[in-house]
Image (cartoon, rainbow, N blue to C red; front, top):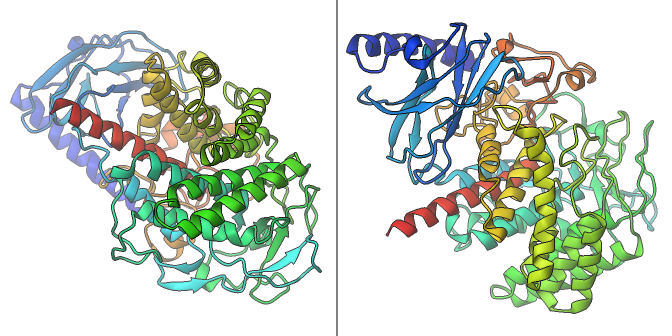
Length: 616
């Protein structure tokens, strides 16, 4: 039996005992009249399982399988059973997903630290904390997954893998030339490695270290093993990414885009036991970025240039050069040189460098590149102070003011990637007030497009349920955070928090989307991963893909569930999520999504630290 099912059974029994105890205590009782519930069908209260900060926005969602209306709810101290706050349910949002009726339960004004649960009639939420430290250590926790994804030497397995990579394809050298491109991170639960996701992940880790340095600890060495080396673990992890990017850009005119392809998709195995044969023994193909369509098998991509990859390299290297300037001058100089040469390749070959498929029609269908070049130019401007980079970054930014998926109902897989544009933020930091306001306005326009959809449902959900919807949710929350930091405008603060809450349980299924976070919470236990499926190894900190539209799920190749669906009553024609190994569309963790989450969790912990400092 799935261990989560056992936990849920025990939890249900515990809730029954607790509910009876509360009823006999004459404290908090499931009073339908008090809650003002017109119908008494089954209902649930969804909360952020991580908890809430005293000064932060605190909202839960009540959803019912009947059309009954809700007027009131109460907040109960978990230790004493005493009702400590009563609130009005407010607006009825109507049907959403599996629910016939839904309400947002707003209790922001209550700010006393402690452990609580919410109750409305018979519906009772899981217990949660209110405290300044509810986000403490979460970003470091998610770094566990990044270390577990390492290729070359894998510190989790304490063994090496993919050390023979790789042999070249499409390059200026003869095909099958052996070069050293070992290292980096596996992209997801498969063992492909992509420059585009790796460079974006590296940038997020570097930015997290730059923006929130006090959040991270030093408990691991550079190789990922336990120990200290005087360097924050997040910077060690970013350096692992940078070292691989250097191998993919070994010369000014050489840039590689991908390592391995979907021939990888054989039976489940740990990376150190990877026996897939690409025709060159243990070596895997490494694809040169030509700017033209590629694909060695039945399918090809639609590449038009190299700028989408080159811009990502330029931004990661330029930011690394800034950060290493006071740590290692020689390394900082090298990163600066690589940033310039990668950026020039992007100027020489504008267009998108998509990932290469082989046997299956799935690939990262990136359709935009100006956002990547904007960020690369902005980072180079920060590094050098040269106005030419500022002008180029600004001009690129005008070509894509709003990331196109924002406000859209659907998009192709990774069509608009990265899912938020750091470029507007980085350029605005070094702009005059007029230009800064313009760039902030681009962020606002994108947020408003999402809000126009989100405000019509109780979950404030305006992010489309396409493949990797959790990655989009994370990025949208980051964009909202960056907008609020730059503008001081609190208009969308509740929308920002709602998207963060969604990732940690405030969703129709009532589950966190991050493996093992929070501890003892309802989190994924059966992800699409060889680590868990074969050996029950935890994949701590991994952000799973997330819910998809029902019509996407029903049309994917090779999906079937291995266990009875513990969330069956919360599935709908609109959207599905399965905590099941067989569902690679909703329950596979991704490296780049987790890297983005690390930035977001660091931002949340840093903000809570600011709140504590303000009280002193």
